[in-house]
Image 1 (cartoon, rainbow, N blue to C red):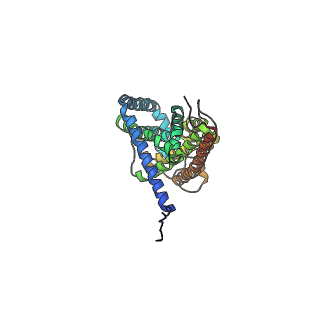
Image 2 (image 1 turned 45 degrees about the horizontal axis):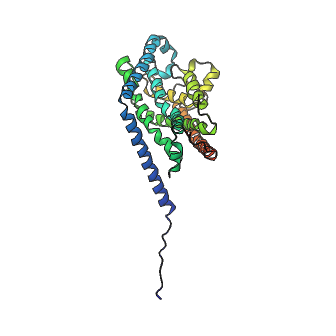
Length: 311
């Protein structure tokens, strides 16, 4: 009898398996992106209203800025120059830019829950984070370009002036701020399942974006005009450092080495270094925390059978 030989297929190496897994996740994100783009593109009227909304909102703030520009310029301090229109344009554009990363994760998870699709996504062989990132693609398309429209309106219609000599550093600061904002957004999204906040006002986003960032971070006026205790509270959110750094880099007449925040006065380094370190720390702490809490929320919903709202 001739001996029979069986060939046993070797299991894939961890390295090869991880490469295939990463490729699958990237292709899945691409598919989500194409789908969200087609949905966005199909609503032509919404795109026209999108442009009108940007223009009207920008116009309102720019006209208010025109009214108080002279008085406001005297209160801005040496750190940010004396062009209040440039000051306010940076505040508006940064707030517009960060809204996607900070507010959108919760919104997309809520949409999947109420549309009855979250459980279908998570039955597919993909990471629990892929549907969230994929669904956010529409907001990347919808929200990020607003930065250029708001800045363009300010420059063309209202005389805002900018210095683009340090654009590379400004791009780096923007990446750090977006990373920190996404960390806050992931924590916000985790509350949907972890704390069962499925309707009404989500507290993380409200406290950070609607309350602290709006009132204290310096979007419309410098932090230095606030009472000292509130200036220190402003130093607890990433928006404050992003506004400070980007205005120093882009506003004409701004001085990079003049401290404006209380933490910059007690730390004997350049204010720009303080801003970069603070934003990097926020990103390093908030992203892992947000990823962990979001994962715990998904696990909780799976145990309780509440991933999706059944109609």
